[in-house]
Image 1: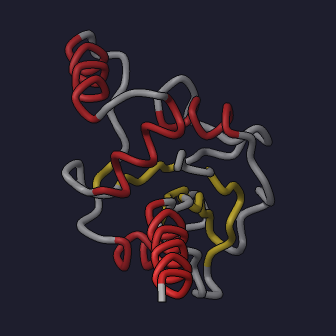
Image 2: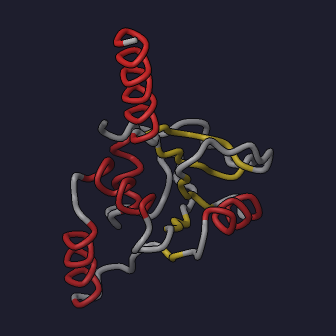
Image 3: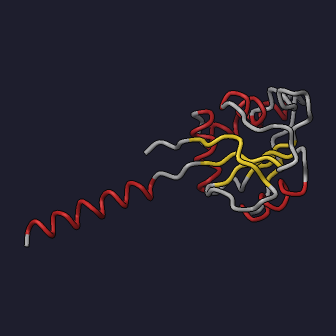
Length: 144
């Protein structure tokens, strides 16, 4: 049954490529007046260029663990930088006393909990949230 085998292989390859792509969901608290953000706005917040949303409200940025897949995918998609490049970037900024990096949280569950409790918080997840205490303001499409 070569045609069945070929169909099965093609289906598995399609499934594999769909699983390899994992969008990143940028989230804020449901009570935040921010309803959407552009990629450049999120980049400015997470790279320390600004500390407030476009409406002037203070933004408290949270990160996932540095050694995690979601962390690497978020920054690679957002800035084009690898985790190592990002580490060097923040080391320079902290050494000069310009700013501090976002605070790291231990897991995506903790990210949901912290952003869900804090109206000024912004974070990201590797899965679409179902928690009613947060709102997605940007979906970053990771490369295939």
